[in-house]
Image 1 (cartoon, rainbow, N blue to C red):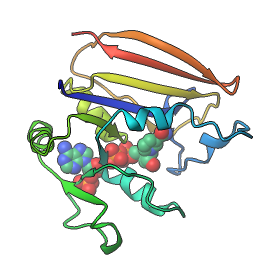
Image 2 (image 1 turned 90 degrees about the vertical axis):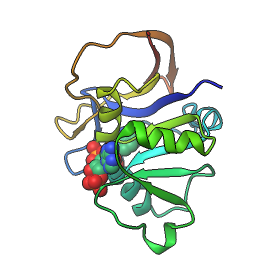
Image 3 (image 1 turned 180 degrees about the vertical axis):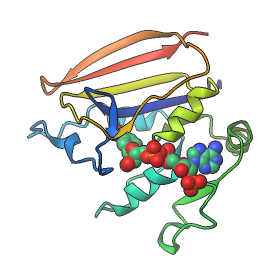
Amino acid sequence: MQSRNIVFIARSLDGYIADKNGGLDWLNTTPNPDHQDMGYEKFIKSVDAIVMGRTTFETVCSFDIEWPYKIPVFVLSFSLESLPEDYKDKAEIVKGSLSDILEQIHKKGYRQLYIDGGVTVQNFLKEDLIDELIITTIPILLGGGTPLFGELPREMEFEHVESVLYLDALVQDSYRRKR
Ligand SMILES: NC(=O)c1ccc[n+]([C@@H]2O[C@H](COP(=O)([O-])OP(=O)(O)OC[C@H]3O[C@@H](n4cnc5c(N)ncnc54)[C@H](OP(=O)(O)O)[C@@H]3O)[C@@H](O)[C@H]2O)c1
């Protein structure tokens, strides 16, 4: 099967994925009485592993919840030598060039990859390694924080796949890279 690298992420109206303090509370500003998952379950069933940046991994670890993933998680980090004891059976550190990392992950049989993080998504985009973008826009201006996108060496065209409105407030746009 063809390999695919997919981003599934939420951003503010002004394009941030975390607020000025690295916080994510603003993700839950829209009332969601029926606990709609904004397509997350369907999406997560469509991928077979997650590649996330070290900051995002640490954010997930800081949540007061059970480990939320049932599929393998690869944590990108140059600085971490090992994962905290509680997470050693849940995730694995990978480092190096993205092409080497992808080769390593593909060899293990994982080809549909959920790419998560800020710097991580930007690094994948810089090397034109993202095939799909699924972006949920939350109607809030944060005025600063961690940007979803950064500078790129060149323009990249995407085709629009669909837009879905959740909770009469959140717009989820899906795009596929035009190659
Ligand atoms: N709104 C959302 O849906 C959403 C989704 C995900 C994350 N977030 C938030 O967004 C923020 C993202 O933080 P961030 O921009 O710092 O990004 P990040 O991608 O989570 O983490 C960046 C780190 O990943 C490591 N890394 C990246 N590329 C690497 C490579 N090729 N090889 C080895 N390591 C590599 C580096 O870790 P080292 O420094 O250890 O080398 C780098 O500092 C967090 O606050 C997170 O909670 C929000």
